[in-house]
Structure formats: C-alpha cells, structure tokens
Length: 172
Image 1 (cartoon, rainbow, N blue to C red):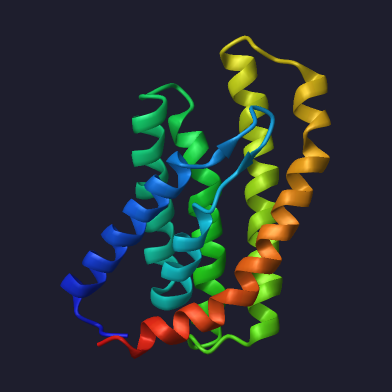
Image 2 (cartoon, rainbow, N blue to C red; image 1 turned 30 degrees about the horizontal axis):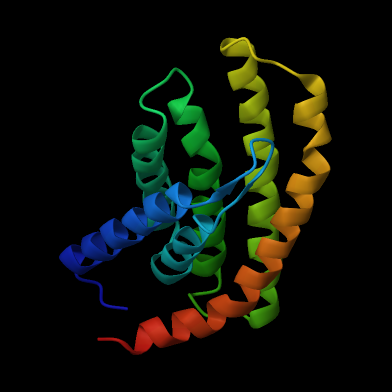
C-alpha cells in the first residue's frame, strides 16, 4: 500500500465514513444489533496498521453515535470497543508484516468481534446505570445471542478479508 500520508488519510476517512454508514443501517433489535460496521475497521487495520485501525474505529463510531444519538456522557465509551478492535487487528497485521495467513484472519476477527460484544455489553451496563434504565435480565439475557452473532460475524469477516485485501492492494 502506498505510504503517502495524504493517501492514508483519504483511506482512513473513507473507511471511517463506511463505519458510520454501516452502523447507521444496522438491524437493531434493542437487545442486540446486527451490523457490519466493524468490517471497514478490520480492512483499515489489516491494511494500514494499528494507529489507522484505531482512528477508523474511533472516528467512524463517533460520527455514527453523533448522528444517531447525539453527544452523551457515554459517547466515548461506545467508541472504545471499536478502537480496541482496530488496535488489536492492526497489531497482529503489523507483527505479521502485513502478510497474515487465512486462518489467522479468522482467529483474529473472531476474537475482535467477541471483544467488541463483551465490551459493548459492559458499556450497556454502564450506560444503563448512568441513565437509569438498568434491567439485568435484558443485559445478561441478550449476551448469549450477542455472542452467537459475534462468532458468526468473526468467522465470515475473517474468511472474506484475505480476498478483500488482495483486491484492494491491486488498486494503485
């Protein structure tokens, strides 16, 4: 991938915008959400590294949060899972010198999706306590379904990422 700072900034901005749009058009069933917003974060992290992965996750999620909910006490907390996922995937890509194996893509994206789900569940708990809508049954009861969705997304994203990244790297 080109090392031009302007080129990287454009890619980061484009992927962050994709995060916001994909987050906004998600299937939201209140207790769990099916979304593809983490895919652009994974693409950026595996393509450009941990800093870019964190920026894409943070900025994209911030835009989505502001568009959907406005600024709240917990806005930064909602950004955190995606920032951490971008960091994790970027560190793995960097340690592999951006030549990650197909199996490792699946393992890493699976771990990242599970991490996002667990952290989001923690944020739901904190947000519910701060905003006085805490229902233990809903938060804990939805955890199993959230984990199933995370596992499915992690496996699918990990399986398609090598092909997506290969196609993107051919573009010059």
